[in-house]
Image (cartoon, rainbow, N blue to C red; front, side):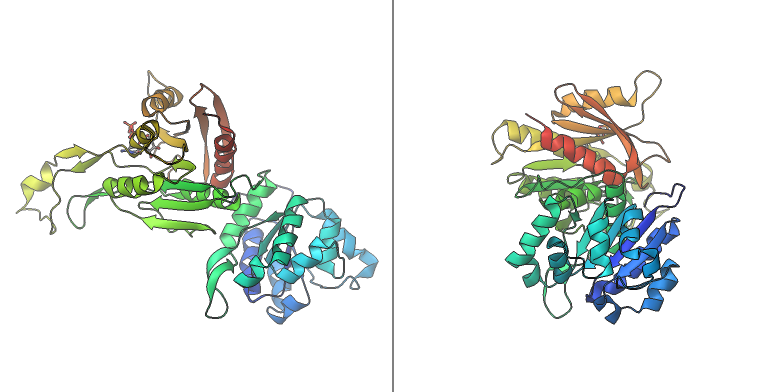
Length: 415
Ligand code: CTP
């Protein structure tokens, strides 16, 4: 989550009456922790799930649901007028219907009707309600008016049923809301598109406990998946080793270990993809043998002191070659990543330009890496290079902001 600037942002957290209302508490805390001034505006129904006292204690501000409390302070317009960002989580089908109709029949609806700041809505409901044509129309109406309606997550709902309709993780909602507040938009330009993303680091085992690997966290790949799914794509992530990351709403994760596993998983899915983004930090070499039991100091000295390496296949270059050979059913836009350090003679950017031409991809995101740069961090920066010679600087921002910049370029790219 991005750090706080002064003066404190005024954040309104709207809460509607759904079982996921308790997760709003984590959202309120996340904003409070970075110093935001949080005002909670629940619907009357939300208070059936979480008490007013909880919202007041967490936010440090009074809580009311109706336009008739503190009338002298003209709350029904003041809260919306002063807000820098409004996040409604969870939003029910009923609340979205009221907002789409332009109602102002409680404090939350009146606040939205007044607001000119970014509004982010995270719906949560049963799958049938989410797919009901009335809800679909209401969501479209809200999106057309510039409100960001986040895709719900798939998974277990309140009863025994599963499907799309779960509230995404509070941390994901806060990250998306912060990105929206920083100017990121989520156009639905990837609707109906298949997106394939690699993320994390691959590992090459020496024995069952030792491996050759790298410190990639997978965060940038998952951020790319998050933004693509929120722009309407069907997303598959082929993930090597990553830190603990929630699956983005609307994405599927295939776990792999070695580079050859990743190679096979990508090649099997590349045929249907419209966009392929290779954000993984791939182990280029593997030991020529892998011991089936743990090597021991003393008895396995030879195997431990000298490890013979074999080169791994290049997943990105092979995918480009298959596209050129007409082996993929679509002509995907292919995006590579380059983690470069630069040296006395050659800059990181120059290395990246050479890499783009060598691999033959359409776009290449270049990050300058070092011991404390990029890997595992929540912020990223660099340049997006394209096959026609274009270079765009991507300013320091959260990995979601960088992901949005990459998608803006990838969707606009003409082969
Ligand atoms: N990549 C890949 N398969 C490999 C190695 C890299 O698909 N065997 C992809 C990465 O996912 C990334 C891009 O190629 O999108 C560049 O990765 P990088 O590690 O920077 O390049 P290398 O080809 O490994 O070159 P070097 O490490 O020598 O700079």
